[in-house]
Length: 453
Length: 147
Image (tube, rainbow over all chains, first blue to last red; front, side):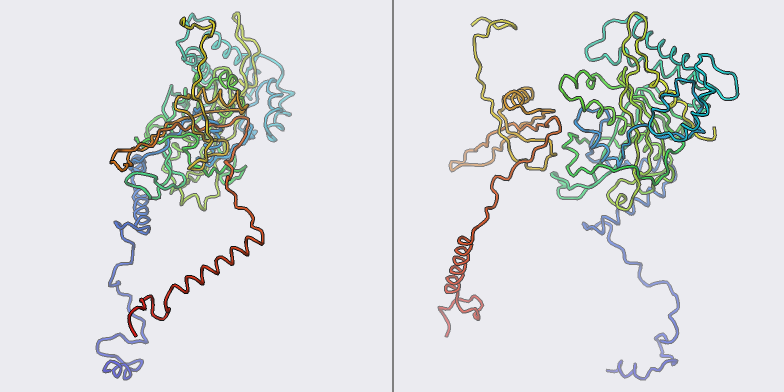
């Protein structure tokens, strides 16, 4: 009652002995209480999101890339092991859904200026390739100049000698399969016996031959049997049994891949299409990944491109994969699973390249909360010794976790060809039915370089 | 019997207890996967041959596991009662075929007679229950005492 009386007496403009005057705005003093925030240790969704935000800030604030990688993969939990070379049926569809990748058949259209013209056997393959509008214009201009010749033309534009390249490839093949005296291969070790050394020899000689035309190859690093690892989260699931039963967890994946050969370069390959392009649909699979079948294990969360962070060759150029004996064509044909042959190549290309490009992006400091600002491009050749399939991958987004994928329209893109034979048969010291197109595509891959060079 | 070698005469016939029972999966499976309970002695090769030769079903892949039956229940003599073990096979069909386990107990459409009978029965039961209960104003308190 006394307070009511006191308030009635107070007029605007008059000062009371202790209260602030209503007409004047209150002075901007520091607030008496800290801002309201959720608890950190409570068992509630708000507390969990606050813990996640603190973790994200910690990773953002990490000083070096090594520290970021260490914090990113610090917490170990059971995760799905994704094998690029798998016999699981329709694995490439599942892998595309895990990595948010669009598969575009055929090779990407190349910018005409970046290609050096190739001698005449290049005309039919160039016309036959997946749409290359710019290259066709260039090809039509070059055809009258590129004569059907085996000698390189002396001039400003360097011509590639198909005969020379063909003889290099045939030499490597014959040396491994005909001239060298080898014992019979051990059981299920056929791939290490002949196609493995052939691939190594072919790539190293071709890279050395082409390094004069491609200065990027001269500064590159060729790894033999390197290791490529990547760890990521995608989607959410409820923990089924155990002491953490009932909690909502992200689905964790890990790829541990050992390509046969790998070329790493100090400068990044140019982007093929702009960052926000949409070239197709990503398959959506509602089932749990364990139905593929895919199995869980808990071990180190490793992110590795083949060399440590301090290496100057931190961008990827080309990977070469050799399919193991378990996945050879004859086995699929015997079990009447002919459509799965291509699936093997595609799943290997998609998974390995996703792991490599994503690890390269993490080496530059990007991660799922800090998405890539420029696309990362790499190439791969998957072979079983005779059949070659070519893949080109553009990583547009790393944000695949449940929160970051919601407003993310970007998709990763993979261009891939079907497997084609390089030769028909090797007998009596000569290679029958050599396919120049495959060699040409391989050479194109090796000659790929950024526009400045 | 003489020892059998490959190519020799087959003098004995084996009749193993091979059976396969298609079951509804407990967790949702992909469209091309069928779940079976099979005899414990069957291998993946046996399952594939069984389906391909007897039923002409193209099989792409087979995966098996053995489900352990629990031994926790006790009978009236406090002896443990074991539920039997069984083998489960997940068969992925070839040639792009799919399979969905059918609904074995679909809800039948009721004709007007049964529907009116059901309504009449429900109303009668409600009236009986109302007679059993006491005065709702007493709030569930029994009426054998009081004024």
